[in-house]
Length: 98
Image (tube, rainbow, N blue to C red):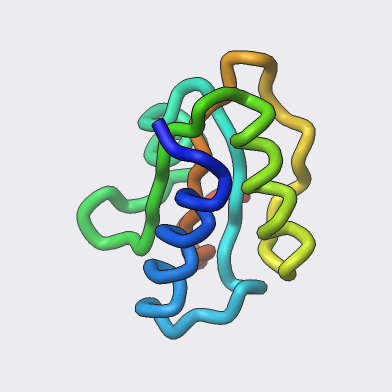
C-alpha cells in the first residue's frame, strides 16, 4: 500500500517515460483493478501503457486521482465507494473506452 506522494512519484516517472502529455492519460480509482483497467476500459495488458498502485485507503486514492485531474489528465473523479483503493492510469488510444 502506498501514500499519495509515493503513488504520484511512481506515476510521474512512468508517465514521463511514455512521452505522452497528461491530456493523453486517463486516471481513475477502483476497487477491482483488473476488471476496470483491462475489462471496462479495454486497455491492452500486453501492449498498453498503464500503471496502478494500491493506496492506503480510498481517501489517499482520491487525493492522488484529483492531483492528476488538476494536472490535465482525463477522468471524472467521484467514482467508486470506500473500497476504491486502487489508483490507475493508462494512455488513451482508439481502442480504449473512457
